[in-house]
Length: 405
View 1 (cartoon, helix red, strand yellow):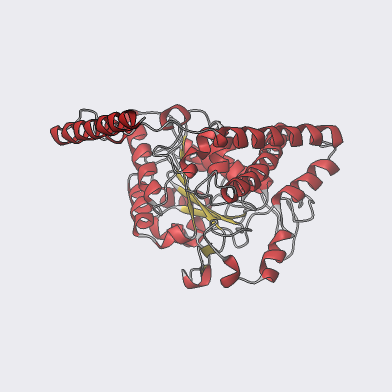
View 2 (cartoon, helix red, strand yellow; view 1 turned 60 degrees about the vertical axis):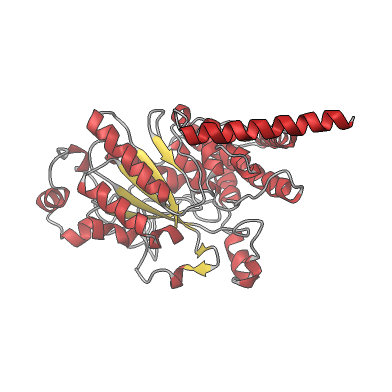
């Protein structure tokens, strides 16, 4: 059920929802099941690290692609989100050092994946991010301060998941994939036109929840796109110590779904691949897996020392593949980006950074009774008793302080 150039995707959208996808592909194209399910021989790349568009019929070590080029408006929106996302990453890292945030897992270098994940979805679709996907959450329309509330150590997520169709960011690996599959299953049972994008990293593919989510989605033929951001390290564990599969996209075939590999620093290719994946899923192709090859430029979090497990030369090699500089060159050469537009985008990015600084510097009133307020819809007798005990203790403390004055 591949969506790549190596294995023609034409005709997939005409397949009846309940038809066997493998049998349909073999019948229409006369190809083997293996060719039908496996990802392209080479990752999909449309704009190279120098910002040059690769011709569709280019030959060589990385052949061309069959994906249509995203529209200019979509590319300009994506570039703006890239610039804003980079500024957010750098600002949040500074806020952690200033003590205004408890922790921040930066996605510096991975912004192309973040932006494409948000832009490929429609308003009624759902996105389930990882803890590193704050830029994607913002690109989905969540207020920047609300998106970062969880990283300042607050007890709640900061935003309404239902309003934005964005799952809560959380630390446990891969649990969000099960939530994503559940939402997709419910939407299918209700007859809703909903596609779910489930995000994870390379380390998550080693978790049992990853297997359970993909297997369930495939068996029940659900409209889920599993988007794996392969940034080469599960904290300090390199990919070579996690899996010996040809690629993480190859794991899809074991579940009966198509897999694809894409340059995770090429936002043009990401948009093209994910846009088509969403289209196929919406039209009944079932789940798909997309692996984006990218790199985490900064430490896992502010508590991590990445110099202990990777060389500076490796980081420098990936710095040359930066998604923002690549996109800036491409858009400038096409006449879509000039100094005036760039200045406007940088001004917006700085405004978001200012909003974050101001919003995360405000003291948040603490209500101790909030510990009990949202545990259950209807408080249990035990919770009521504990709440009353705390209220009594706080009242006695307040009276004692007043008497001492």
